[in-house]
Amino acid sequence: MAAPKVFVSSTCFDLGEIREQLKRFIRSFGFEPVLSDNGDVFYHPDLHTHEACVHEISNCQLFILIIGGRFGGEYVSDKNKSITNAEYTSARESKIPVFTYVRNGVLSNHHIYQQNKKKDFAASIEYPAIEKQEHALNIFSFIDEVRKAPTNNAFEGFEGFPDIEEHLKKQWAGMFFDFLKSREVKSQIDATNHLIEGISSSGKKLEELIKSLYLSSNDANAQKEIDSIDIYSEVLKFFEKAISPHWLEKDLYALDSSRFNVEQLASINFEDHTWHSYLVALGIFEYDEMPIPMENEDDYETVECINFAMGIENGRCFGHDLDDKELNHLFNIGIKRSNKMQRLKVLNQINSKYGEVYF
Image (cartoon, rainbow, N blue to C red; front, side, top):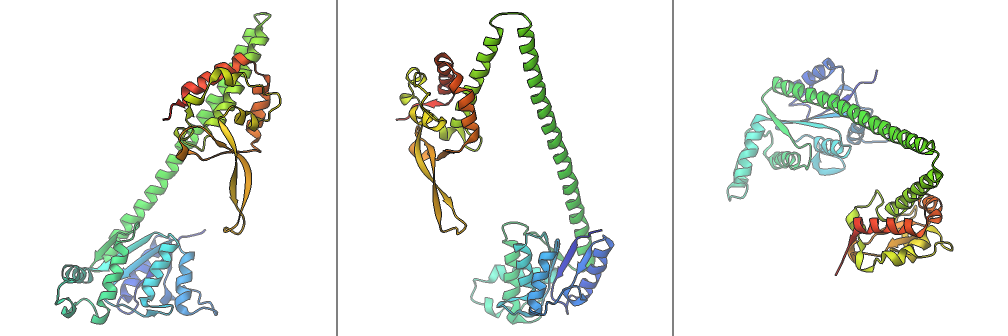
């Protein structure tokens, strides 16, 4: 059974006891501890040991950071960083949850530094919780890096391992609760989607039933009226999809009512048009070209499309490529089967819904 791997990052010599207690604590949860001083890191023969530790973090699911009074070894790839600092950076880049703990004494010294760092005597302050004074600013800078991170920037002070243990229990319990809650929400979403599908199915059944009842009335015009309703519905769908696609906010595709002569547009002959040339003939769209990125992101090819031609100029964006199969289908089963009165009714409805006058 797979178990989460928990990487423990800290200086080793001054925090050896804490690391050993953390190892037992992590195992008590059924998790797998990963500690560099415990033989848990694969030291790839082609990598420096520092890089091997950093690379190992991407294989882990949780990251515990302990900051004490030692800076630790300098990171081989960046002498301004400690190995611990580099491991933390790798965890953030891998988007692994980080749990940070800082010795209370170091936090207290960091507070003194924050209060006095701009004063003349700042360079002469001794920080008793820091083992080597020349590393004090590096350690304080590391703490600042954690607390100023845009996310996952919480940290806790600790005096001994019991403080870390108590806090981790609460945090991991919170993570587990969040996991269960997410499953519950997903279940609710799935149930809602299932209900919507059921409503849609029921709506289609009701539509068929009404048609059947209407036809059974032996009304000579029943089938003709049903066909007329179906055609009107397809014409409406055609314009709705063209003018208000699901991926675009409606206010970007508002019609300019001052240019939208419904009577004239309803009279346009569609016989010699494709679906896109028909929309261009209506004046709602215009032909344009859309840039498409190639495999090399610096190169582009252009694809012919129709672009929305009415409304606010700076609100324009690409409309539809000329290979839109759904619009072509709706054009054939709707527009091409419609009469002027049906198109007039739909265009009035569309203009009422999306029309605006721009000055």
